[in-house]
Image (cartoon, rainbow, N blue to C red; front, side, top):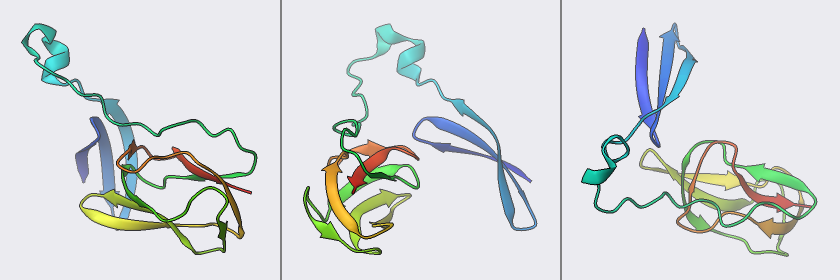
Length: 126
């Protein structure tokens, strides 16, 4: 069966067969304000991560699109594998984003309240 799922103004055509889901195609959706800019009043751009990673180390990436609800660490915090670093809200669920390994947080890239896409760098761990 094929489904079209819209997440963050992107349409994902997904094919599901015997418990396996495969993304067939991804397309951008166009908002009504973009089609008729004269009819738009105020369009607010989505919040993006606050900065690009500049520190050396292993980047911690968002596993799914969502909103950063809480940041549990700060720059310089020593973390162990499995420690909760971020709370990411996706599809009305709060997901814990954990440290992939032991290290020290070299940089926090994402900001609280920021919308992130899959693969966006949230932090850098040395």
